[in-house]
Image 1: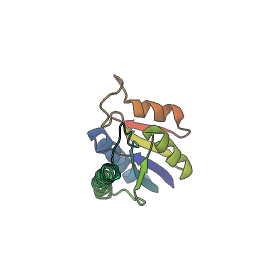
Image 2 (image 1 turned 90 degrees about the vertical axis):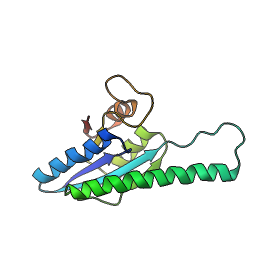
Image 3 (image 1 turned 90 degrees about the horizontal axis):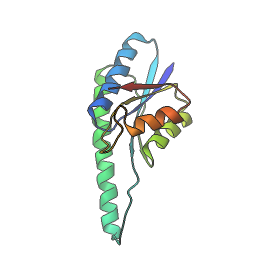
Length: 142
């Protein structure tokens, strides 16, 4: 069975990655996918109250839940057999690679450009880091 980690962030290229895996699922005898949404850990400057910090964390979790819910609905509509989605926090590329390794994934699928505001000209900075760090093949979809 081919195990694929699909990194999603709510972007159009992320959606295209799900669609690409959907095409693979139609032609593969056995494919299992896990959706992952990684949010950067918030960086706080100044003196924020515990309530403010909690609100930021709750908003971040709610956003991840929305992204994963939409991604899961699309994956299932395309006939992709999926595990329980994964929510993670930290350096995005590092977390994607860490989760793929920990879950013994055979491949990572992701969009070439994500929701980040700053990136490289041809590939997003997260995609570049995943390619360089990953020990498994990475499918990049634009």
